[in-house]
Image (tube, one colour):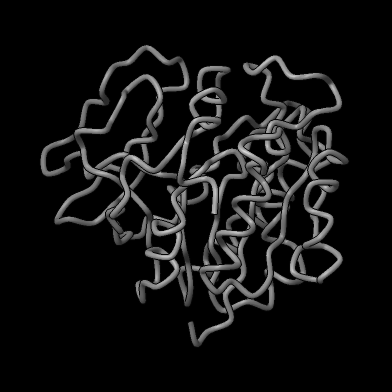
Length: 261
């Protein structure tokens, strides 16, 4: 990578479906000799990312503890989401985007701290030259009850659809649009698109900070607001992905050989 690339890793959520102790963030849970947060930071570093900002909120000390070696080396800094129990994931993204290290970068990778992706997939996205890119896998992997579905036309992604009620129903699409694939929750932005995303997230945070009611928008809300045609990067390791939402996901991760170096 010639351009300065930084990353935002979202680790502020409560992970209530996992039933973990109150002082335990799911991104810091022990899995196969590592943790989700450690694994993601390590993989991003291997992919050539210069600096990483980790957004923390719920049980933040557990995340900071597992990442201590990276903070001591200066590769990782933290952004605090004080409203992790009020606003949605888009607010965490806004907190990360406001970090000084992120503001100085030419390109930004956005990652979820509870998403275990094969390192090869992460490097694929980091190596693309597109101004806006999204890691995806083929339509056959889409599970309407769990997937964030990449929707677009002409082979480009226009927006993301997510069934917050988990009913398992595919979205109805207008003529000319189709399902591009299953979003693997990893994005990269640069140039004017990154500048516009910074503006949108700044506006969103200012609105949320003064809002009396929770703003429960998902992490793709401001990305959808961009209205950009995003380049899909189809993963060479489509089966190398575990999104940690349930105890079954944790058990699966513990038996995953590609998590171990």
